Image (tube, rainbow, N blue to C red):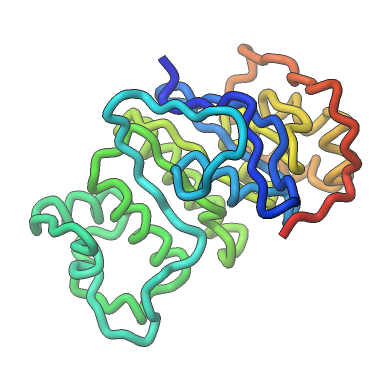
Length: 254
């Protein structure tokens, strides 16, 4: 049983169709990345799956009692407001000291509950956001561009952490990104989005797909190869080509 599935969903803002005929599912324990250029509808898709944005057509089904942990793209607390990491972890739902410490330890920040959130680096802040998402023991983690603003080593470290969390907790991961280098190889499956699904498959299959090349060019091959040795490509599925949509690649949805 899929944790979450979308069947032929369309999302419209007024007269504009931002997402067209999207079908996807996330299975227990897998890491799926939705990749697409800015304006391709990635955040909108995540918010539709979360139930924040309504689908005009199609349907979304979730496994009964599905626990979702959400890591937003941007921190919604005021960076100037003095609040400790420990207090932040109890927003909006209180957690015990033991639970908070366990979550911090899991993301590599043991003993740092007394730190002020205002003094944390971008990478530390992302780890705290991830710790907060893990407190609900999610079966599915949903991350919206979790490494935007981090440098490449910070980005790589964060994706390694996500893989560790998946192994330790068994949680599936659905994340969105617009950057290619590290993210693709951290995934079991990549879905390339530009208003509709252009192609999907393993990272290696998608990076060679003509639809992907049309959107992103050829510049990521070397960086992608660096990370591929850690992953087993023996179970590759070919890209699912979605014929019948004559959408140009130039659509730019806000």
